Amino acid sequence: MEKSRSLTRRHALRRDLPLWASTPGGSIRTQGKSRRSHYDVIIVGAGISGALMSHALVEKNLRVLMVDRRRPVRGSTLASTAMIQHEIDTPLHVLQKSIGVRNAQRVWQRSATSVEQLGQIVRDLDLKCAFQAKKSLFLAGEDYGSRALRTEVEVRKAAGLSANLLSAEVLRERFALCRTAAIESAISASANPAQLSAAILRNAKKKGMEIVSDVEIKDIKEFDENVVLSTSQAVLLSARAVVFCTGYEFLKVLAHKSQRVVSTWALASRPRLKRPEWLDEYVVWEGSDPYLYFRSTPDGRVLLGGEDEDTEDAYKDERKRARKTKILIEKLADLTGISIGKPDFEWSAAFGVTPSGLPMIGRVPHIRNVFTAMGFGGNGITFSQIAAALISSEILGHRDADWDLFPIS
Image (tube, rainbow, N blue to C red):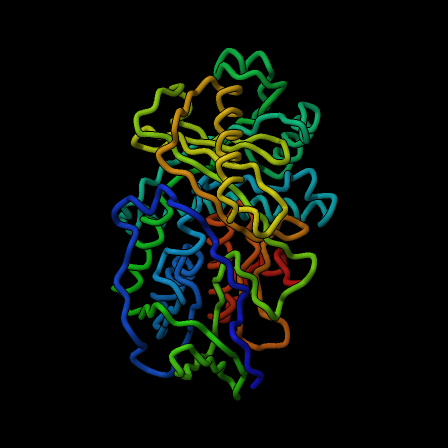
């Protein structure tokens, strides 16, 4: 067994204080060590990806262990702005050119289904996580103008996805926004990602899953039909299947120059901020690079982010964070007239992207029964639900019809 310091690339993942760190209900108790040495499934990562994976497995009469080198819900999940959209970063008409019309349609259709499934999970478990169904407003921008949006509406409708093209006049009348066009659609949502993840994990614990924190996986090896993991606690664990839900921290065995980590910035206003009434019903983003996105929260905050940079460590720069915060506030004011003033919270984070804008979901190459879900871009919660459904089905021996859509290349 070749020794290594860590199986995943280490990142601080976030800087300063995200809004969700100050809200109750986002923590969960863990145990100091595992109760046994062998499990049916071991999930590595206790964020939203791991939480949804656990939900898909815990009621299947399986012994499931979750481990994380941090406390649960203290990685990239805490930095999420939780704009839960079926609209992914790569527009459908663009994605069709790279993976084909039918496959692109399937990706977008699966994304829409996954948002609906998330809402059903919240209702079924009666989760207290500020989950709200929302509409989406995709504004024309520098990269995608009115002509591109018109094309996008046509291909979405051809895929059976609801989308309405709004003219510049309609945008002015209904939203007081000055853009050449926008796409209005349904099937989006928002939530408190820390509360959402922790509530799902608490339910999984009630169903028998063990959660052990402050445990890092140091090495991995196949042995007969099992996967053996060595940990930072000098303990060997084995399982029939292992799932790495490490989010934006790529597995080292998958490191490739086409995979990259980028930086992003976000902030939240004070509560009960003066804002247009329509904003409480929508999540908003624009067709620009970098793009601005924003939404409101149930307590009347305005949450916004963007200004992404294709630089792995830029988010660590405190002076840059101050500049990015200023830019985001000014962009929002210019577009909507909303005056943020001094934000209550501001933070920066790293996240992983792939060339296609799609996640990598599947078996780790050359290692049987080890799965990964990574490279989620700006659609972490939606893609996490897709990954949970696909990988859990594979573990249970029922291949999902969409298993081929998100290959690990």
